[in-house]
Length: 111
Image 1 (cartoon, helix red, strand yellow):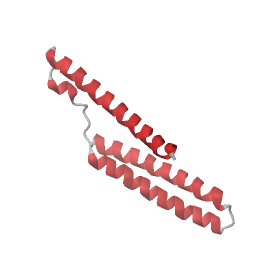
Image 2 (cartoon, rainbow, N blue to C red):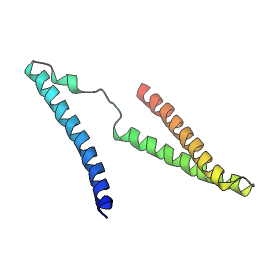
Image 3 (cartoon, one colour):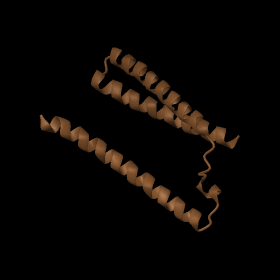
Image 4 (cartoon, one colour):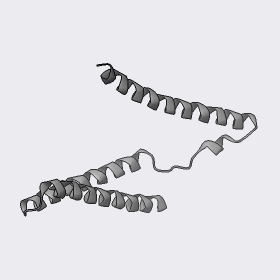
């Protein structure tokens, strides 16, 4: 009974601790650079995309997974073992969706 409560508590506290240390360390580094006279434009990472690229990646991944499920069902209907056809097709088409997303986002960044 205790482990059912204790294990998720430890996991979430560890994740919180990692994010807290990361953010406080980054803040201290930035404050030290500002005190030494560094320009604020130094903190801009140069990311142009933002939310649109994330949506594009997720959309193409979801399309790939959907196509993988359809292809896995087709292979299962043709006699292939379902335990093999579904995961294989999902991973293959999901990977193809992410690869397509990479090339599309690279093309959009060039424009």
